[in-house]
Image (cartoon, rainbow, N blue to C red; front, side, top):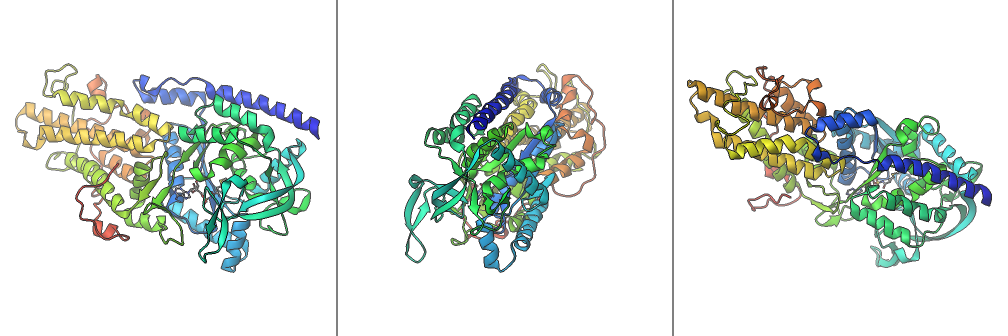
Amino acid sequence: MRFPFLFATRGCRAVYRLHQKQFLSPVPPLWEHRSSAALSTQLCKADRSYYITTPIFYVNASPHLGHLYSAVLADCLHRYKLLQGFNSTFATGTDEHGLKIQQAAEAAGKDPLTFCTGVSKQFRHLFSSCNISYTDYIRTTEQRHREAVEHFWSVLWNKGLIYKGSYEGWYSTQDESFLMASQVGDALDSLGKEIKVSLESGHKVEWMKEENYMFRLSAFQSQLLDWLRGNPQAVQPERFHQAVLKWLQEDLPDLSVSRQRSRLQWGIPVPGDDEQTIYVWLDALVNYLTVAGYPDKHNQWWHVARHVIGKDILKFHAIYWPAFLLGAGLPLPQVIHVHSHWTVGGKKMSKSLGNVVDPLERSQMFTADGMRYFLLRQGVPDSDCDYTDDKVAKLLNAELADSLGGLLNRCTAPALNPAQVYPSFCPQSFPRAHGGRAVHEDYHMLDAIQKLPAVVEKHYEAMHIYKALEAISACVRLTNGFVQRHTPWKLDRKNNEDQRWVDTIIHISLECLRIYGTLLQPIVPETSNKLLSRLGVQPHERSWAGLNFLARYQGMDCPFEGRALGSDSGVLFSRLEPHNADKQKPKKTKKSANLK
Ligand code: MSP
């Protein structure tokens, strides 16, 4: 047993080094590029594959807001990569095995598969209602997944990385997690009885003693440390990277990877031992490989995998999963993007507190785009955010309805744009050197919008979506300021010079709107489509490569100049009345929105 194990580990190290080299190849800072389209083209040439995943969701209960958040983040990255011309695969799905699900099905009086199918459909329905454009929806009860898990197990077994042993210690069924004594504390249950709980999640833990299979996790401690130290971007944001490094400096005991079948029937049996069921986390993590085509067709996608996860499942993804992969001789994920949680009233959402926010209901109330925009604009990966309906309504009214919608309305309204066209830009009115009718602030605005795609690209890449939206929102304000400053509605259209200046103001504003609409597609696909269609921008002109802001100012031809606008299909985003919006709390009298 010992020799093959050592051999296997050395083999893995070789694969791992190869992967790191690829990972570490220098990428020039995005903001050095004049045009981000040029950068995208370079990246595409290098490798056009991109593979992004959400965690697969437990089906013990209906979806809540936090689940939608994980999905919206991953969807945004997937859509963004497609815009850049990448070939992107986006996987989501449901995690259907394990004790927690077995117990939930029992409580519902249903057989486990029927129960799982019902809740899995709810997730699917939520995702299609919110335009989550996954390319694969995996259920761990599918045959293709069972085959992938069995194969993966056999690889680890054949390499001597799994051995029969016995586990004695604490287990949390809610978290499906083993805990050390230092991770457990005392608490009282709802009846006042003393219980033990996980210090991290607060969930009840139980002592268990079982014969089962163990994975040699301890053997991977130094390789995991090397991986993280050599790849500072592997776990993002930085604070989570540091947290994993800290855990790895502590004791890393071997991990129990099976449960006795007498206790857990709802799962995949250990190959060759019907008395044991594979540990649900090992089973679940392999879903990422199943979707990639493991065991024989995963090469195109596996080396470019990126996982979006919530902070509560960091240990499973940044320690167990890379260790399993190293053991199986497979490349490690390129990036683990971690996000924090949504709280309600400052507290974790829970059925017992009655503060669970139903994302389907909210997306009907605020529209799918509204919820997507809110979650991505307000959600900060580094720290938890508190949800209220009031905040949603205020944010959407301020930024989508008034600021962006108002700008579109102004520039396309027949009063200001009677010909309903993308009018001409006049270089004499807005020359590159000062001297026309443009003022200092206008040049500043052009500069900010010229740089915006690269700024947004940098933030999308780092999954700092809120920063990208902050930057876009600031530019929308600049454009509104530009229109307001020059009051084109007061100019005399009969005067040729004034007319050219009005046209130039509108041309520039429409160009700004085209940039915002294009950049916002990953966030608010329906609203962006409406906006770009109104501007007459064709579907093939909406990619990252087509961004090229204000070509006429740069002395080039503008394909939109003189083009008829698209038809008017009404307001871009309807204002929400706070009294409709806030179901949970009494209406506040505070006037200003508490926006980040
Ligand atoms: N089934 C596991 C994941 C297995 S992946 C191989 C699981 N499922 S979960 O349904 O409990 O959680 C799925 C995702 O929702 C996780 O990323 C989790 O962090 C996220 N959220 C759950 N509650 C959340 C909030 N309150 N806020 C934000 N996201 C949270 O874990």
